[in-house]
Image (cartoon, rainbow, N blue to C red):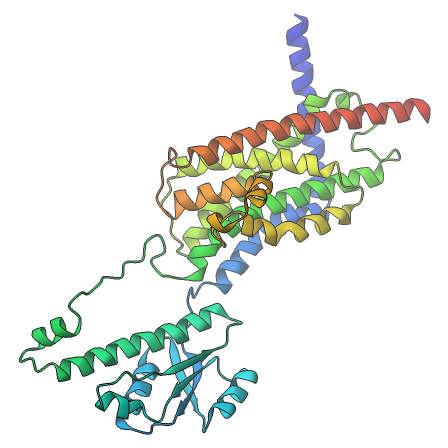
Length: 402
């Protein structure tokens, strides 16, 4: 009978902690911002900025030293593409560089004076491409446009010199081995579909840790002993109900926020969405638990409210790189990969991208899935340990300093 009474008492204490933590969240504007406003607004802002996916009509300057029919044809073909717009004709390279330095154009096409002459002599002619490398998307558009137009123009010249009688013979002679360009996992070939799925998962972790840390900092500032555990409240007498009560509160909030981040936002902005709701739920549950217990452990290191913001904002960009989404995982040094295993976002982002963007199954992401459960268990045990220390510390101070 005492066992059932203890279980009932523990459940009652956990529910009390859950209710009190929910009241603190509702009353604290800073926690509400990180728990509600940021997860709602940030994904929309990022997705809206990158909604175009690719850049178009990138302005370029042309230095045409040839002034021939062939050079003008090359320029017209470049200007006719969707990615490049010929905005200026410069007299020389120095003038074109001045346009780039003033950010009026993003690149330069330099056509040499012997451009058509070399072609008529059956020699190779070269068009120099100068790009502003500060924006990789603009560089890609300028360089690939010049490459595509050069290949197309070369094919046409080769067909004219081939002496074939039909268009089909000319096409085979100009390009005996053709290829089909089929983009896999990113049909639009855009930046948003490539990077934003990993960012959404990282936002879930960062906002959750920030909110928990902010709440803990407030509790520590208000407690005269500087502890997270209130002194003298009978419902805060044992560690496990405290940890479980707080976990229930955060899990209830982020069941909604997580569904918004991983299911609603990709659908709103037409990102690849291949995972079923069962797969997303199966991944999101251990990931959210791991983030909650990780945030509770981090919150014990926070003495003031502002500290957690400085800490988590500082590590946001490194954590995005460590996921292997924006930077190849194979190029990350081994010791940094070991560091990345400490954060739930590493396994969560990798599993989510493979499930939702690549059409993987749960068996394909089994390693990431079980790693999240391992992290959840490890951080749960660590959270219980640090809260037990806080509880012991609070009791000792209450005895010493009545």
